[in-house]
Image (cartoon, rainbow, N blue to C red; front, side, top):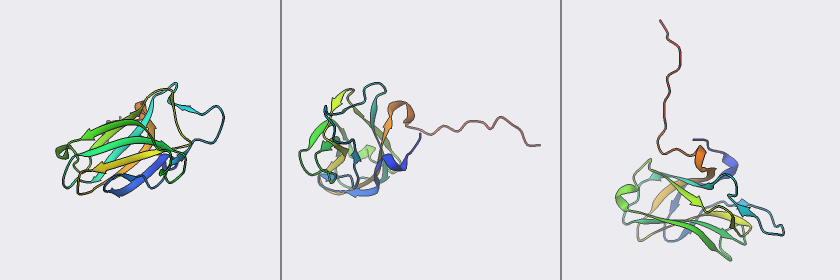
Length: 143
């Protein structure tokens, strides 16, 4: 898995009721509006940094007309994660449907039905995201 700081929208951020990511990605204000994910599929990788505390978490990929992700919000993808799965280190991929026309800014919104959860979220391709890290042999022997 590759993490790019410029594509990270949340860094160990605490989410409560309908909280949006602290940062967003600016796709530019062009005409016609950009479609995202045409070619290689894109989405947001989300890694739980502090386990959920009370109930399931709704994770959403959103776009908005402002960088704070508060105006003109469109929801492009959702996933509900049961409390039992929101453990420290759990990772999820939220795909952005190919060719999705978006507002200028994209990010994530996490909503809990009570309690909190902390997570890091970043934009990535599906091929660069992996659920479990894999350690490969070094290819040499020290004797």
